[in-house]
Image 1 (cartoon, rainbow, N blue to C red):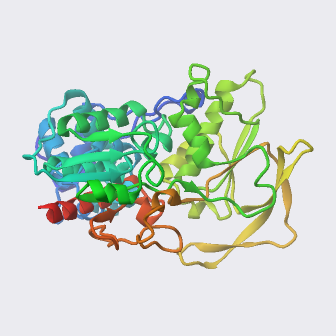
Image 2: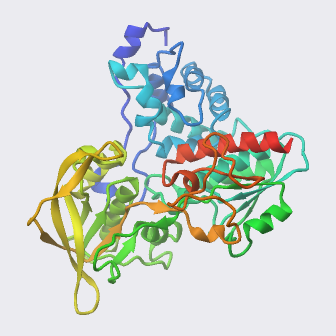
Image 3: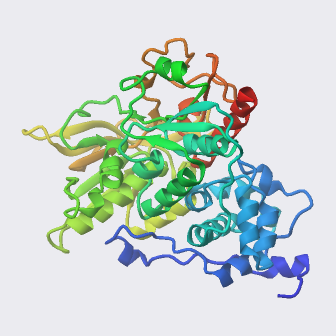
Length: 476
């Protein structure tokens, strides 16, 4: 394609992402977004203005070289685009699928001020998928340093830190509490958003190239303690995430049929509940499901529920419903706009300005209904969103037989057994330097959700990358 003027680039429409039809995808767990082909990716890359001061880079928590990889892509040099990408991002096929680009890199895109921003996330996914298929950019490892590092947790923070330290020549061992590596990438994100084969391919390739060892079924705090790791390693990075669910403090939360989104998604995703009966991990759901909350986890839980209802239903005529119950309005929904749009397309019912006050049970101790109260929005709270206020006398009941609570998480306290000297906040998160991740204990760093509380995959990766840099300086 001939060189275009900025005006001509702005005239190119943002390329649409092909997706599964909503009437088909609610009956399967196959990926919803199908990805760009090469022609579409190059056309989208043509929209980039190649700004002299690229604000998109400042919007990326790991500082991906966005203009450079896009320029290489549109010039047809995809291996170079991969190389430019991997200078900063070790997991592009993952980030391209799950990062909230609309509020990060794309949110800063200059083109977005007068038109729609460049689809940076979709181009990142294209580059990542190309590399998964062709492996044009092998990870290079420096000469061995003789130093040993323990990484606790194999989620995005731990994986990023481990790969960067492995590339620097250090001997890295990852300790994972579950039976497979990947952390929230495998237990928390559904197959239709992030296929397991993508996660496993990224992890296996990095481990093989760099000689990183992953020890699964190691619960730090039980199998080994932080003190044990300090006795056997030169440095420790804690990237154990925030996997302890929060529950509502209302009557009825102990009834049969109430579960956390963490438990539900782990059974569906990691334990292959979505493949029942091929995998004997049934997930029992009623015909009417309520998911409390409206973040990305809530959307994932609701959309998984809908698919399970369809797949496990005895009859296509069965009347099933899945509700998102949220105490604020649609404008305050914290989930990604794309996920909300997909949920609405699929038939999820949104009950806005609604707050549960009690879960009602039957004589067998099972959920039969949820008592709610209508809300109105008052003054903004500390998060900047308008505070929901109950409307007196507006209580009503919703007939429900399964309740999934998706109201946030905190770090699992098990890991801190025998590590009382690690300073933590009142929320259970580790106190660590915001830049380096250095904790209050010598030779221990931490990053990701275990420090910030539940956040995004890419922010956790950024924390892992910054800690790896500081650990490397310390070790050398």
